[in-house]
Length: 234
Image (cartoon, rainbow, N blue to C red; front, side):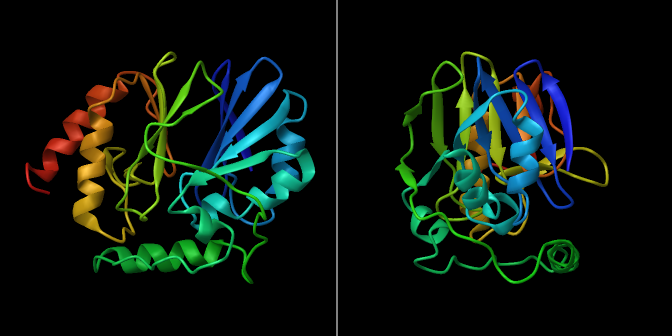
């Protein structure tokens, strides 16, 4: 796991597949996602010198984002947060719907799966459920944004006071050309495009993606330029 400072209060945690983020308010830390299974101890050790993890906000249930959440919670006492639609999947009460793959996505997904731990992962017993527009107590008031399409209960997190937007997998950066793009492996591409438009309408200077390098300046312009590619009707 690599730890990269993006801003004095914002760090990127990069895993073999996907990435998470840590936001600091004084001695309190909030994680946006928690990496794959087996990441909990490494995350706790990496951020322990900076502060205490108070909460883990999950953008969605996929293993590369939620796999380490129960481990982090057990080690730090952190609260786990997810959208109300996603929470039963995060807790392991119901299965999550599989993606509807584009043909070109299948080899990418197969390659990613090979890099993830096998055998499932521990599920958090308690998950605080949120809805679109709820404000969380970090980052000067962090607003949750429901962005269905990648999964039914995907959320983004917007820190308007700081101009920071965490998109989860609703938006990504292409490993080929470094351009901002619609996230892949969606359950409903049309809804995913609508969610991309919703995020592009927000004011953000920094955009933090689940996959690909963050945009650390002019993020709103980059999202708006990219979303035009998908047309008015998706």
